[in-house]
Amino acid sequence: MKNPDINIYTENDRAEYAEILEQTSAMKHGNNPASNKPKSSGGLKYKTIIKPIWENLYGYIGKGKGLKSTNGSIVIPSDPHALSDRLEILLASHEAGNTGVRNEIISICDELLRQGEMKKSDYKKLMLLI
Image 1 (tube, rainbow, N blue to C red):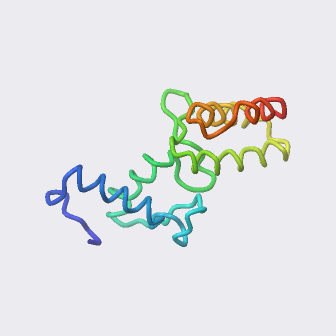
Image 2: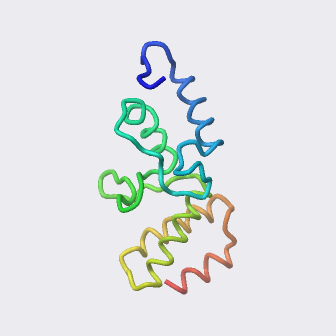
């Protein structure tokens, strides 16, 4: 529905909808699973349902907004694919001379290591590079 009635769906419905959106890449620009850009609009459905789902899954909205932060700390998404995508961008930024991304790179590497998505040897090599 373009303007969904909040009285007819439950939190379980919202969770299932979030799962569908994530698995089909329906929230991503061009429905491209590799995209880091959300499909966005000014509509009620986007603002009240889709945007919060995106922020919950990926922790940020679009290019240039960075990551959402609470009380000054860095909040990173838990999805390993989103983390890897963000890490790739940050490493390119660091290579281009931006030294202000070091803490975020370390946080993402720590999380990927914790999730078992990164080998300890790769972690050590990256830490030496930054």
